Length: 314
Image (cartoon, rainbow, N blue to C red; front, top):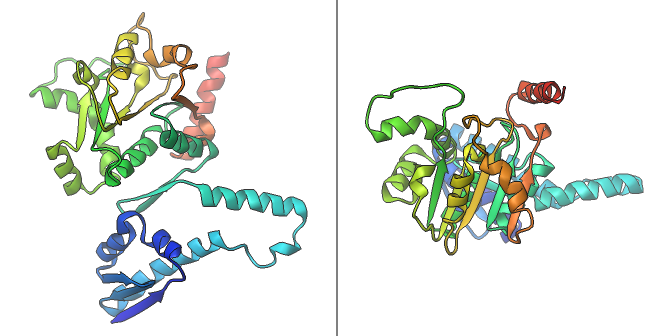
């Protein structure tokens, strides 16, 4: 069976197909169909049920895309204040940054997250500070993978300090990789959520993506890279300075952290807390702050954060 979907313009086709035709590849894999695109025509072939499911998927996407580009009928009957509000909403939808990774549309879900994504687009060094679940690392990973796919950088480097979260793990068996891997697991989780396991493994083997503890950054110069330092609140003053001075030519860095969850030993200064005063006047660096309103995990996470903030203010 074969079905044809006709598109109205090049822009509509670009929006529907996604970056590097990712949405087409996703639909082929998900619905087990064959898709060809030429001259504003999308040809979908396969079994009847599979083609029907794929067509429904693309028609829903088209409805969303066309809805963003055309005002709803009857809007001219609304009052000025409603038109102004609708205009702001439409502007936000059109200007919103989004990525399409592993068949998922990833985009900001709050104004602070949108500002964070734009900062990563415009600044070479972005520092994101906020509580757990606000998308600090996830959105940085989405931006990094997009930059690698579009060849804006030649590699992604993911790092975090190996600090125990308030408990002594004692002796860990195994080689060095086995010992440090548990600390790096959250970075792998975010990576595999956006890149197929086999593709991620190839990138890791070829060095296009590197995951390493912060201590491994000393003495290096990171050129043509997108570097993410996660859990920055657990960097000491010296570690933070070391990391920030690794940045080389044509590179960008994002530092993420939650200054309410510092696991450093008593008496150790958090480098993330300090740089807010040290670097706040440096041109080319952008600080982004997120709060409980930006939490995208279970609703209870927002309530937990609020409860702890209230308790700590007493």
